[in-house]
Image 1 (cartoon, helix red, strand yellow):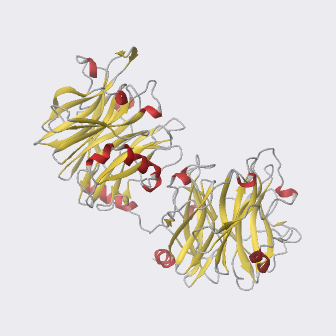
Image 2 (image 1 turned 60 degrees about the horizontal axis):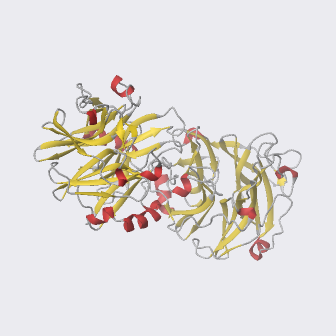
Image 3 (image 1 turned 135 degrees about the vertical axis):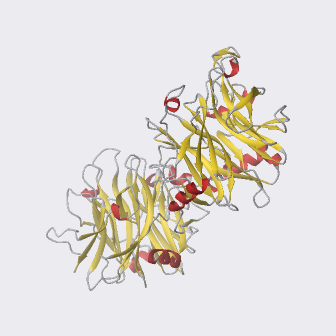
Length: 638
């Protein structure tokens, strides 16, 4: 069932008026609000080129129009214009909400020209009647746009949604709550809020090269808060595609996304959307709910205002098909737990992709560390509770020793990458990716006595290559016990996960890793093109629990984590695969880094009934995510 959105036949509903110089060039991105039995409409108006502060420029101000039906407008006038230094070069893109008998109009305030991130912030004008402005305030001390208040308090607080770092990508849509309305323009409030930005960001699906921005003020429905937003695909690598999308937020906890539209509601298709000051643009800016009909106001080609409508119930039912069916892993609030150390050259660029053992009552992390010349080695850290790092060694515990992991290209990636650890018969086995940079990556195997590992006597055996030459193979781990008397190894050959069973780990006479394919990209999330394991599988009564990553979006390679359940006696038989990811790149330290949009675990353990995944974020730092083991197993079984 698709969401049917119908453009109004009389579009565009508002066009430039050449008789008014202040709105002669463009009138777009309009926002409607009901009040007094009528519809008040605020919109961005752009003048013909004019002299302003000695410069010739098209000046944006905010216009006002009145309507009885929300379609036909009259009584147009200029309502908000630059008065203060923080808005000296223009006022753009209003969002208006009525609360406590007043209309709060947030807009983009421009204080520098040429326009730059430090001069693009949010302003606020407050009115009771659209006859006069009672107050004006600069809201954010940082780069931001597209802010709107929720039209009622939530759990006793005022709530707003805004877009942060719009001109310092990646942009983030976030929530802010206020005890009183005066906090909205408090610099002290925003400084503290911004210092904890990751805690406020909505986890909206987007690729690293996409751009998102708040569209209309949130609409209250019986299903939850409906938030229309702009999703611009490939914004940072044109040609970009502008689209209008929607989220459904929980009524009492709006930071929880219930559902979303998998595809855009609208993309530029008509002449008035494809041709104008900025071609091929549809940009949501307002919405009104009229019984069962949702009216969506949007800017078309940055030139005119247009209107489209859809049936709300049909839209929600369609969005329910993407309703999050599984619980996701919860991030440790103290993330990242490990970051690069500049005073240690061997780990000054990145620390990520940790293997983990839970042994002797402690959590042992062996993590990939990278120097500025992109050489990978292994570092060590230990935790008593699984979260807090008690100690981190000053020197690496494992370094490249063989020609097959030496640096083949100056300053290129090389070394010992992405370890996985398994204890078998009092021996700690480590499988890792050996890489020169000028040959395909291959799986290497080394080991150490468990007693030596716990005593930190790093007497590793001589590493051996165990995967075939000239074939990319990585993401390998041993099962923690033999299967029917045989050693079992998972590895990624090509783009698939393979299972190899063998009587010994000698790998003599070119007896390389192979086996059978057990999981392919087509088995999991739609759009995946590559899969690979996280840590070694975990034995449960329901089967072998395997966490594994999927890579989506061939252009930007977005890594997320999902899960599968393998048969205990025959792990080549996959009993279940999760329908949706359990961990996705959402936080800044995951979406940015050496490689953006990455969550990549190499280690997972169970303590009590809690599953821990230790992962690399953005190929730069290390984080922890957890969830109840039984909850994940129940979801897989169902």
